Length: 76
Image (cartoon, rainbow, N blue to C red; front, side, top):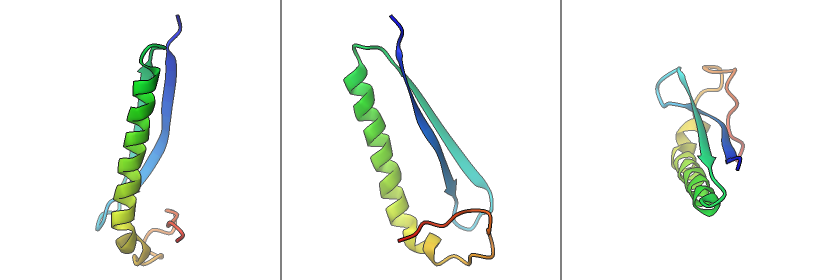
């Protein structure tokens, strides 16, 4: 049986006070039996990412746009 493959899209995170970009790639390989558990894990990781973005939103939003013109800023 072929295992299901879930690839989380690349997440680009700009660290505060740093010009380097950190790209996080998460790929989880699941069998048919553990399908539900992997889905819960992916949803959990997504929620952690969203929570982190909400916490750091004011710093990112108020950052000068001309510093990193190639990085899109979140629109609120």
